[in-house]
Image 1 (cartoon, rainbow, N blue to C red):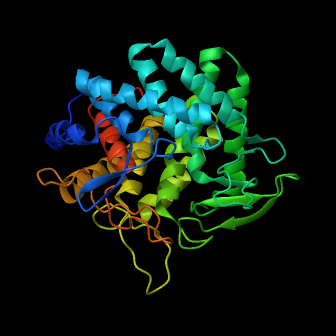
Image 2 (spheres, rainbow, N blue to C red):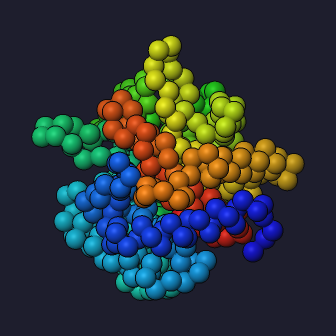
Length: 374
């Protein structure tokens, strides 16, 4: 391992100690958000299903632990029923099978994990709209609802599953779909100032853009911080897998927007652009996601540009550890003060499993682990 600040090793130790305790209750289930100190367990089809096993694989990679390995493998096996059911699958298959099956295949070389991940990649590719060059996000939430033209910024983080599948199979179709979706993001999601739209609706037949929607941000033209975080990391990952300079340059633009709007403690509010009188709770998960993207970005830019991204990523993670971490109490979440969906009032000041995952991934990177599950 490379030399790192003392706090990084302290944080890593505290994470290991806490997960050794919480894993006893959570087991092979799918925590989503912590409520009153205990993680609410979601159904396996929910988009966050990969983050708990993914977190366990991060710890296992550093120090093999049969108990954590068994839990992660059982979670992966439970996702088989979701894959076979089909109807509840949407664009978040990348989140789900990258952090379970791809992670296990990369670490252990298991063939059954490779097969699961390739099937998920094929199903994800099947959601590609060739008229508008985007991956459709959700299925209808309610009877009669039409989401066939909806794409969201989060989907950038699902694309690594497609890049991985192209490498595994030698089939360029997966990578081609991922690139076309990313090109659409550059054209329609990223504003000139580096701000990001959460949702864009297209006409599914013509492929023309219809409108931008506020989604989990305050408004269509506000600046939802987690959307910017998804963009920083997702665009940098697309650059990692393709070498397309426009992806790197756009990631830098969003990163500068994000960094310039950070408060004194380096942990973002849930939206950077709000009118007077609107509550501004923190979103620690946006900070953790962005930190991972910034650390990767620091590795990909010229050496003269590295420091600004590296320093910001480290400062975010250190603040999360020192000011937002819960290490000794009964709280099951690692990182406090996440905001899941402010407009709907869902988990607006809670630990979130994806915030925990990205915090641990960021720590792992600071400890020298450069190979990603993504």
